[in-house]
Length: 242
Length: 311
Image (cartoon, rainbow over all chains, first blue to last red):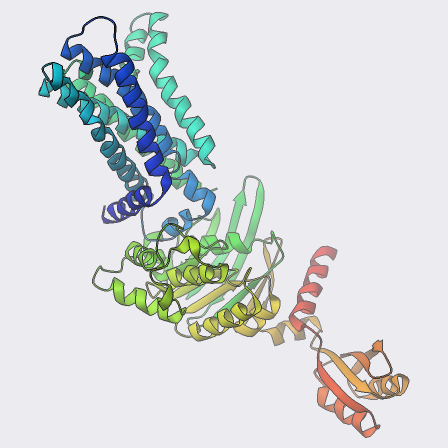
């Protein structure tokens, strides 16, 4: 675990020392800001504060997932491309520590960027009432969704030989997991229940938007994170045979 | 220090290395010589615990690589063919990170970083960003990261590739200094480099070790021990006759003939330079230069490559 934290600290430093981290942070804040003005505040009819907040978390979930793909695509694939991965793989560090360290750093950065959007919900207080519970639930949902998306991205990055390929693989896996609920509409029980339960967004995120925290949804995102990181570790281990 | 038995590595259906067997004693400097694609890097990556073998055994300091890779990695410093450098870090921060990864404690890290910077003459570069360094300095930082945790075994894959002549001499001196303190395994395309820095050579060809030993042992085994080049002033034909009459000389040819200098290439059973020198001087020739063939290791290598091709 010490090695994982060491790797995470170096990676986090790398986000802050290079342009890529600032570009991703700026892009997320810009897109969230535009969507906030266009949809949450700029609607024709009057809205309740809770609806404005729900809209905010709705579009923020999209930008969080996209940011997660961009943040995670470099984690392993870039190091493999530049040859720096050998420093880690030739050191007495377990593959799971490498994966965890990289995931922790990306998650910490994503969390910082996500929490930096907090001024938008805070603006609701100018003309409305803000439910702290809904804000807390919404941000918890964003962080859990971001964690799952980052873990899937880490798996994509471990599988790919280049960053572009990593982004394509991760994006495909994410889109696949998001649209899996469509299969529920064309299948019968109990299969449609399985598809609904597997869907990354459709069933599990909307409750957070509304300020509801279900243990089922929290467990789902944590399990997706765990399995994706477990698979990424296995990929790293398998690479030592290739 | 290293025992390799029947080491084989397949990539798909192709064997990159096949049944390698060799030993390396503690404190020894051994050179891995081979053409591109011969399997040098694959073998070094397995010894560096980056890759796992398909079959066979590798023991480093008595520890089996596949059974306890963690333990082996603590004993190893590995410089791959491309130095694994994070361009955005400073030299000092990078070396400290490498040291901590290899299990050096936080308290000992500054001392170890300073020690490796001193060995590689990097002290002035401590606060420099790696991305701004020249190629030679980057290579030095690569070697420094391999040394920073005081490993018992140092594996250097092409440490002099891309360096200028001055940097090559510096790197060669450094490797000489490291001998004894560490067991050193080097691969290089620069055959002269290997011959000047290593105690012993392992020649790898198409994934197999085709010869091993000191340069003298390899030359004797291949019959290239007595390749001699002579530059002299005087009539070429007479010089050729004199050289051919020296006991032990198998053949002599005129390699180059001009008014001011004649160059003879002589093949002998053994190194008989003193006898040749004496005979030519007694015959009235002015001796300008007398040496072994331009690169003995080169001729050993070419000979081995040709034998491999024929077989």
